[in-house]
Length: 279
Image: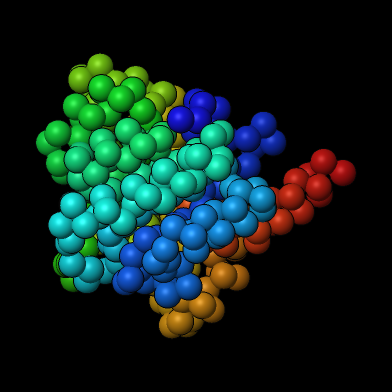
């Protein structure tokens, strides 16, 4: 396992850590991110690491709008060989397991993963036990509904307040179980049960969506449908510019980790911005 402690807070220059997405699935929303073999995934992982990724987020279940749940045994079969191969080749890279299920998370951590990225925010009652036993960081995300129905006309009175309240409830559960605030990362869940106006409000709010100062903040906006609504880019392949536009605001919103499909472009963005700031 890697030393994850320095990897769950912002870099020394204030920019977020970069988390590259590795989807070991046949049906993730961005077709170019779908991977099917250990060899192919390791090749992409190597490119991400060489281009500045601090984390690799490995997932075996698509959670795009309308996606169907798969059996946890199938999910484990997809992700374990990849985690094993990545950890063997890259002992110090941060590895996150993107899963809703405690048995998948436990198996991944046993193979060398460092962090759980749970989009369902502890819907599996055994997840807290796994986090406590493994002493790993956990990212909890706000999602209204489940992937099958989350985009069926979601409504909020005050989206920032409601997301913060839900994250507060989950953080309290973790803290009450003896898990340190410094292990917890909050994700507002852009595109997960939100319309465009909700997404924009949450991104604008920055750290106001998370309930405790010492916990982390993660954004995942990469190539999402919000750029179809905002920019008219219906094809995920055409959403990189919009993604980078939002990423450029991540430092000013004190984001700790940004989850992306396009690692080199985000590395270049942050380097160029940093050069101007330091001039």
